[in-house]
Length: 322
Length: 272
Image (tube, rainbow over all chains, first blue to last red; front, side, top):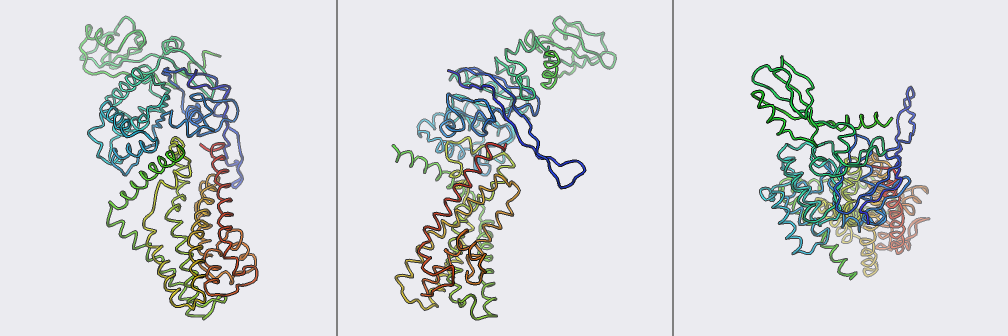
């Protein structure tokens, strides 16, 4: 049985906007945020749900969680109608909204977990065990007594994930979980999610702007554009379709002729070859392997890796399909 | 089974409320200032009534001593309702910031969560002002039938609070459409509280019908006061109507329930 089943899902919003030239008149306009989506997610799958801003990602998630009613089409989450069975469903899914806290901002973090355990009616022994597990794996121990408003973004995000997973949900939906996090915090969070999924068979659905998230967490990608499904398949398949390359930028000790590294494309040089841009396919090689090869040819002073831009991926995907 | 679920839910609500109380009490100075301010506001409103009566002896057939009872009853009921559900007027902020979605992700009814999401203890002193006015009023008035007076006061305190609480819920339900209409709906809740603290006999027919029946504010303070004092009451609002307060409360709850449900549906259908 599927964990998520979406069939010809449509969602319209009414937007009121001023009429040009007439100050007090407002005109209602229908905007279609989700336009005929059909897909299913099976148990234990990890799916990246990507698309540009305003593509309809959050709207879809809200319909999956029973917050919004579809205009037409159907949604079933964990085998139930999410709007009708909202309360029962809330015990079976965990949702992290990157921008909306589920924690009590003026209380110590530990108290938020006590309250959430009571809200989800967890048995005290089970709640304690689960909390200890999450505290250890997400490294929350150092700030359990700190009021939530004083946590750093990275700490708070990990705390939010623990809050959404406290009741051991079957389906975890993460909306931009790594937005604004530093490299180390991102890494920790991703490792945790991989482990959680491996040990419990949790189904993951995440929306993100970060191709790194998708690469490390998801084996399947759904690309949505203007409310429509533009791609459904593996990440390597997506990379093959639109060449979602990462770019290694190296600063060298001295000017060098354009580097020829197997498995990469030389995009360009700056300062007579002091800075060089090399594009590579992350499904075929790694930044480290490319770097090692560069170092054989020249001394590297500094480097950065640019992730493929989601907007760019979607644009290329779209232009191909026409 | 049903009982254990019910009890488990209570534990959840108590956990949230307990945390709210602790959070407020932990900022002692600010908490004390809040309490004092709320008390002063109540005293000023009482003084306002006194100023009116320093110009006239009788207003709407009631003396100052009698109006103390109206003021006391309506203030206790309103402040108690305000304490328990008054923070529902934060709903527009939750909707605008999108934090309302977080409530949807928890396995409890939305309204129950919002009601138990906060408790403003500073409103306690406001109840204190009402109690002072009520006790003062009972001691200076001539009460012909103490047993009947006690019964109608008890009835007023319980169901009057329900009437005001229902009005807060109704106002909050409207917020799902208005979003920026907190001022408008506040004028409705606070306006009816003001209406309830006046002798309804001074109103014209339209206001009498509005605050007597549509928004049953007169049932809370004015009608019970008539019963306490053994007065007959004006046309359209006879004193015996005071005993129908539970019906008025039921009517208020019905309206509140319908408006709230429609509001939630509207949000799910149009908001986000």
